Image 1 (spheres, rainbow, N blue to C red):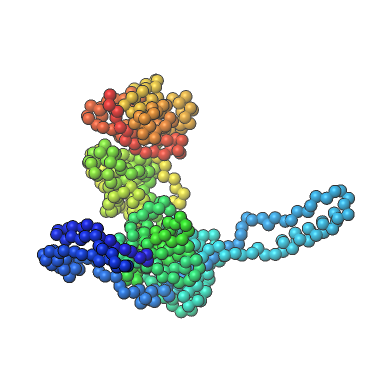
Image 2 (image 1 turned 30 degrees about the vertical axis):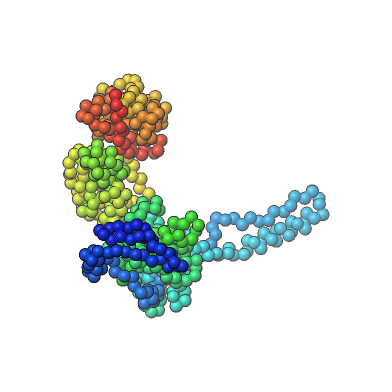
Length: 522
């Protein structure tokens, strides 16, 4: 732990004053004048335990208890698809007296190389921990990825071969099994939802292949998204975590596993006090599925979502300061969401009784919902809450959650030419065979295409580019520039500061997103 220094300069709170301390040698003396009433208040606060409990004198007893359940993991891998390049015979003049000599030499060398077995090499050193006395071991997927052989070394230095029971790349977890003639020491999972920022934590692992190593710190933060996968919800700690700690456990002060140490932030490659662990509640659910099915079975809803910004929240009538939930930008054909009647423009506020505070929390909530469950979904739709029931399906690996093309016949007063929407800084045109060919827009896409974007205008501010298709304005489909202009005029008449448009981008694989466009003053 880094040494810390406390300085007090000119503090005055409720009659408690402190002058800048005078310094004599290495010591600093702080003079305080404290009123009796305030002094009594401070005594009462400390006596009643309002502040955090003092740190323990040491962690030796806890470490001694936990170390036997933490293992070192080594893997080996045979290089695959790597052709051993045979030495080439040098080019010699025709009829050279050395030609036969070199031919015999290189033919012999080539035969020797082919007869030698491919060399096995260690590819990974990591950590793991035993969760069942029969020999089940939890670790990270990346620790055993591509391994041909896996060896688990216990604290008593016994080495046991391990086989893979299941693995899940999306959460970077794997479950191994070793066989032992006697029960193995195991640890239990704790509740990661109850751990608080500032709580003591211990990390045990195999940094740099050194063997069982204990480090101590606190929980620094919760719910970190480090862009490692679609279900990021990491715990952050300042306990020292280094290369080789991957797959090792993070414990609370009770000796329960509250996380699996997985990643670090490190410009230098070593610990800088920013480590990340998968929360135990997520790990426990995935490991149970790996043990039962050999893979993770995740729930699937079938929607394309985006964050609700303050602008979008105000436009949808959620009110100022109510930017929460997940905005549905698209719904997949045949998906549970489509069958339940969820529509683009809906804001999912809760799923199966769990609040959706942020957009990125919804995928994790849905993934952890048992397949086949009929889950209530609270939506915000056109100014009021509605509840629908979704029967959760199983996510098929590789499933593409694509936007659904808008329906309709494409008519309804379509203009035959381009239209300039000055309030949005856009020039729009109807979708014709010519415009579809020009911007590579598929036949299934309906709406109005952007042909030009004014520099500095509302459209440019939100990153719109020529070729983008406006599918909806104010949650109603449009098929002509005239319809867009009418929606803009209506919004201006109502005193709106922005209009909400649904954009489809063929250049990005049909990605859809709701975008609030500021209305420029006329």
